[in-house]
Length: 222
Length: 46
Length: 245
Image 1 (cartoon, rainbow over the protein chains, first blue to last red):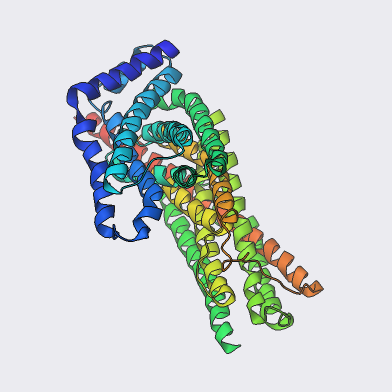
Image 2 (tube, rainbow over the protein chains, first blue to last red):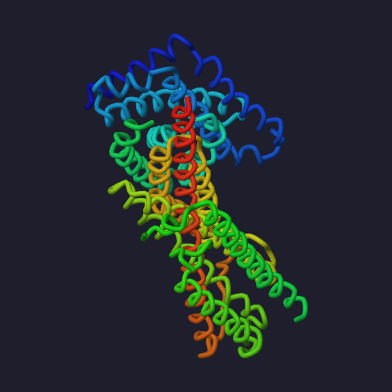
């Protein structure tokens, strides 16, 4: 199963490397969102400062929806999904593979956003262990839920509107927990933030587990 | 207290109207669909 | 009348139940507005409490029915379980919307605001969105088995999602207590009639839910049958064309 996962992840990432859609189109959206927030909120007032963790994670969520749509549009071509089914790959492995590829892309987005936050909003980084752990756990949760709901909306003309409707309410706990954790980290009180990390971990484990189980039946008929 | 009554009537009113409305829509849908289906196939249990 | 079933979704059972529901609602309105007195603390506003908790309870009941039916569909792939889940979600959506509306309308005169960001209200709002998502996926342009399977996955995840949202909002709001936003609880002087009316409202609303669910299930079943009838007739017409030449 793991071998299949790495195979699929490698395929997705290689396609990304060659087409550069994420780097050329999705990453700039993330930066643009930061800029838009900068325009909307007065940079000189403390409002932007206090809102930074929330804005960061909202940007991540918006970009995640785009990334999930991209991830499943890769398989929308003629016969690609049949080929995937007939290839004999373990469906759980396919899930984990797409999950890993998505998580990797989201990690890249987060790094860029963090740099953007430091540069554009003038925030100093603090509580790095908590920040990194939060990033990883939130990533895993978003990627797992995204892969699962992505396949539910895959291959449909209404995918672009159905996916956000399905995915964003599901990701609300991630937004709440990740924002609180980042607030505590940046405010210099990371001890308060670690319980939120636990919630993120539970979310990630729940969706990774469920996704691995549910992917098989979903893949065979899509 | 009459100010409160507005809210109470609004709450109850919306509820009753919505439930009655949904019921009506449901019953009318049921009748329309029933006419399109032969009698033997109309029930899940038959 | 030779046809075994009438041209509607009614049956002797639903007719009886329907009459009971109407009578129950009439009694409830009487109890809520006439028989029960103003509350010592809440005043007349307590009358709204005779409808809001009942709506909330039946909304959650609908979700559990949808949850169970979805699990059953994933296990057995039957059409009946899919139709039941869909019916429960649709009725549940109406009930959830009403729960939010009555909660808001009660909140305004009680707390002065239409909305508070507490766990209960927020997770009910999220539930509403999750239910809309389920309804959306039941309308996708895909083969019926594919559609039902995907909808069932969404249905199974309804309950875990609401639990996750509820917990995260609960921790978020209770750990960040503003002095000005003290616990928005309410006090009421309980009387026997109050408790009775409350329980009665829950019973009546549950019966209304069952009635709506039965009709909506039958409507869903008829939709399936109507599609198959249409398909059969189209195939027969095609065959008839072939036979003529």
